Image (cartoon, helix red, strand yellow):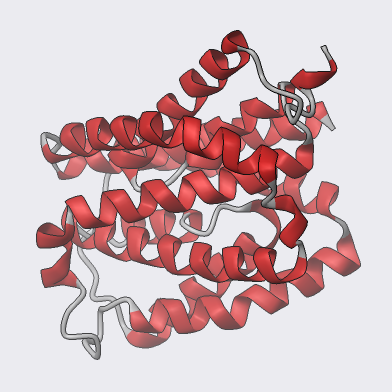
Length: 264
């Protein structure tokens, strides 16, 4: 039974089946909404060590983000190029890169548990409130506003692995359409994940050892298939439905974060 927490000696078929099911559902949610893989994927903490879970969720989440962005590139590109456009992704990413170290500073001074409790309650309550209120009128995304939202999102990424949450709330409140909102959210999440993965590899290379690669190779096909299924469902949703899906994904993320706290 020790292998359930550290499956280096060879995980059995039942464990792989359960983990594959968890990651498949997480991948479908990510393909549909553009975020939320770690919220569902954190259920794997019941079977894996925290260190292995962190590495596996990082790798699979980035894989599904790349897969989703590639599949939707034709739809996303008009909202991302040219790169210097006022309502584009560059101000958000610059803000995120500045917000990331600020979030790490908050983490060192306040503590992970307190920050996660507050964030999980905000996600659940604000998502529920946003689902009940009517959509806001369309607003122009100024570079300064995009920068501030990106900074908040970057800070959240430092301690909760939910960099897209601030952008989802902002795009829903501003009445930004489905394709534009997905372009901003997915691009920002992918950018922050690339930075986080690089930092994790540089500081903790031992996390990406034999156990990680064994599970990653086994789970990757399931995650990719689930992600493409989610993308296919996304293509069939309208603006209002997509807004509800992304807000529901954040509510699920909040519940998942509370579950992680309870598990600790």
